Length: 239
Image (cartoon, rainbow, N blue to C red; front, top):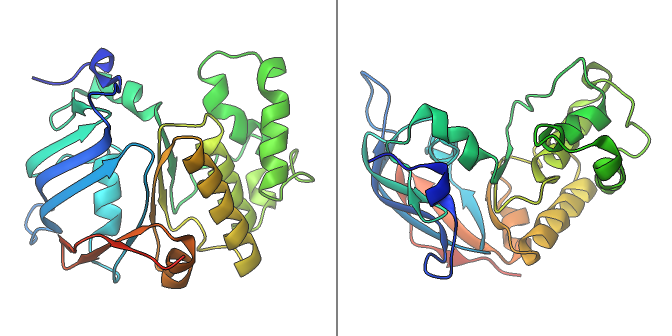
């Protein structure tokens, strides 16, 4: 039976944020992109997802963010089975996630401040209640002097940092990021890594898909490796 939003509440009896069991995924007329994937992300854990291009990293993230459904197997998020979730119930789960897309998905007619604040506005909070937090977050990602700029006036790296600020502004329980440091320099990549680590220390479960093996190794996080649609055993990166 499809899960309802009310069943998504984590308790001490469900310490896992994510559990995938025997998951397979593919597109019609093509070989499966993911094959028999088993994955557990304990609540409050930090993982990097690595692997060559075409290994299935983005497909796995799309399953976790409920943009796709598995061909087989089961997916549990926040203790609830979401394998066959109804479309009307998806927003309740997504509000508990912070998702950083490669394509940014910024709204060009809104300022950087308004884009970052959008998740808070959607919960009907008043701007006076969140303005200081949004400003602080934008300063943290190096956009303190660009709050009024529209996305078309931002560089690729600035757009990436704005997308990250928007994804984490609500301090979500699960943060999923697809190549979040791909458009920034090494100094900013390290700063963004520290931001993710800080949110993780506050209790968020973090999964970052990245080609940056060196960054993963410096993070000290668990490293998951996808190869030809299969997930290799988890290993600890060097701190």
